[in-house]
Length: 449
Ligand code: PEP
Ligand code: MN
Image (tube, rainbow, N blue to C red; front, side, top):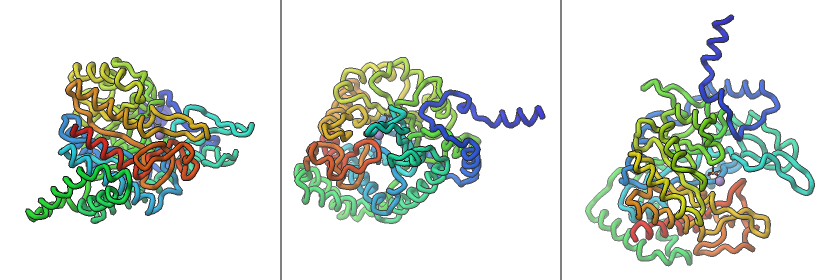
């Protein structure tokens, strides 16, 4: 009897005994336990060796030898698991990647917020409409988006749908990126098309022509590298739901280390990064590359403690700081963080998330962001790193490949009055296709300037 208790206690991972913020309250714990047992029997979605490879690529970013492009939906939805949606997102990221590779003259590590980004931390536990108060929507992996009592009850069966949705998404992403669709010559042709056919694109004619010359030169030399035809592409999501992430955490038979095989890279959000909380403990135990969102209240001491907890070996590529301060704060708050971290000898990847510190509510009630604020935060990020002689390692953006109207501004300008036209996000406002390409070209110019 005693040994049974000890055995089962020994199987509880360290993070499961700590307070975990933002977890759903499932009404039926037995149903949850059954789902978790099933998930534990499912095969990994990624191979631990791929996570190691991404860590090595991010190591190059940390050393200033590469740039990270991380992007995708704020929240994926089960309905969005269709070929068109996935293709449009991958296509947009590849186009951005091509422009950035040319401008930065270093490899661009491409990581989607994709194939697992189904769970959302929320600032309020409930939502009220017309006098009716219901639990807030926490992502398709937890409850339904519809504003009805039934839809908003957390349902553990959704964790299985999350797994299957992630698996089919990742399968198609792998097919696109290795099967010829992502050929650099094709991606370049799409970029030329953007430059020719959209008013915002025309401003980048010079840059596009330079890229075209470089491509022609390589063609003339007879260069046909495999790297033209296939693309390394990784999947990432916020490790929010610890029931799911724990069930997908496995011991790697090659190394004996734990990996969260639900995605290549996972990050801890601004609302769950409590130093003594379950999420940080979880992240400290798995070997995946780890991201952590740092908001404007982050102190240098906290940043140093995260390094101690998550990257005690100081391994470049293990830890990525995703800074999301807001355009009005980044120039003020980021320098001290970077200075103190650099002085400690640590070399994390520094990435800007110019979305989450710049959200506001338009008069129409739509949650939105201004393209100019997004751009300004990226500019601030580059300025700070330039001043300190450190590497602005990359950008982390919420985007979609479709022509939605969720963020205002951009070259093909979207006005506040347009927001209702195609406001389709399940959570935060995303850059649409043309705003995303616009941003890539502007960041490219920044990189060169
Ligand atoms: C997000 O990335 O969608 C998110 C909720 O970000 P943050 O944790 O930085 O608020
Ligand atoms: Mn978001």
